[in-house]
Image 1 (cartoon, rainbow, N blue to C red):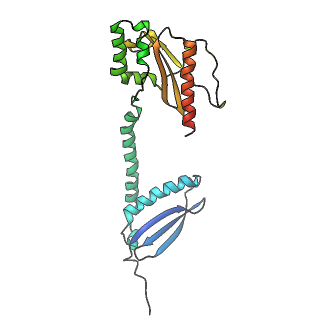
Image 2 (cartoon, rainbow, N blue to C red):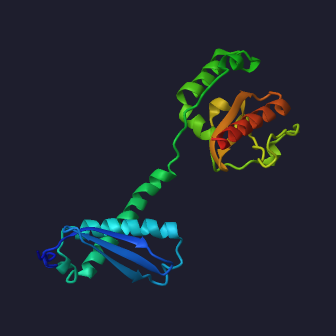
Image 3 (cartoon, one colour):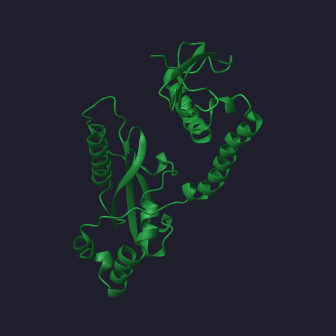
Length: 249
């Protein structure tokens, strides 16, 4: 019995795979619908030879997917007559899409989104002398119920910087992990608060962090006559505890 393989004019490309072969070469594997496999070693351009292997693998996977989408089903004889410049234009078109996506996403990513607030201890605050009048209580409740978005943006503002001048004398913190820097609280006293309903109050806030980045905030809102040397360490220690808890996950 004598058998010949199908003529290459009719054999179609089923799958193409690009993968690193060495620091200077990649391997192109072609699989046809006839079940044949062809492999070709290709020298890498000088600029790509310096890439990390895992990074190069990811980029070659992207290129392989693109080529499979464009060439699958074509006869091998067609590949030698392809308009590679046209193929290059199609691939570069994705760069234009990425630029357009960046332009559309940038305003969205820069937009501040309010975080949900967990509020506790309102009954203790309204029992303080500063809130003896109904009008003052109504202002506070309006702040906590109707102005939560503005209040959330105020207590969690990653761009704010701590002003050392706002820190009264306080006791040092005891850290469980000496490698973790203690959170620094930010104080806004009375009229320093941008919301008029907060002018009778002081807001003390401190970030808690994950991998060094602020992800949330712990705050105390109360009368301006609060005991600062006790309240500030409480806020900072709560933020420190949450940071340490997140670092263990």
